[in-house]
Amino acid sequence: MVKDFPAMNGPLAPELPDDETLTGYSIGKAFIYADFRWSKAQQAYEATLRLAEKHRLGFYDVSSEWGELWLPDRLGKLVVVHTESKPITGYRVIPIAFGIKIPGEDEN
Image (cartoon, rainbow, N blue to C red; front, side, top):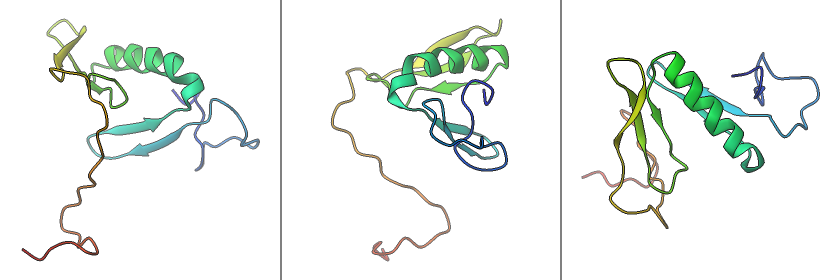
């Protein structure tokens, strides 16, 4: 993935930082989050689905109008296992942190 969409920062970041393919990555124990430029959205979507299927990983399309969740079936093919019953419009992201006090959070 970083060959086609180089990291925006960190040890894999290129010397020349002004490239349309630069991508922000966050990697945790159970997830990889990547944010792509809108101009590369379709190319990134296709690469992500291809690689998720190749490595038998799930894929949650957070930017999708329908919020599809893709998981590999028994044969390794990605299938949509969950989607919103209607398009997601005007949603807001609510940060969730476990074991961390968020400033302004209710004590209750």
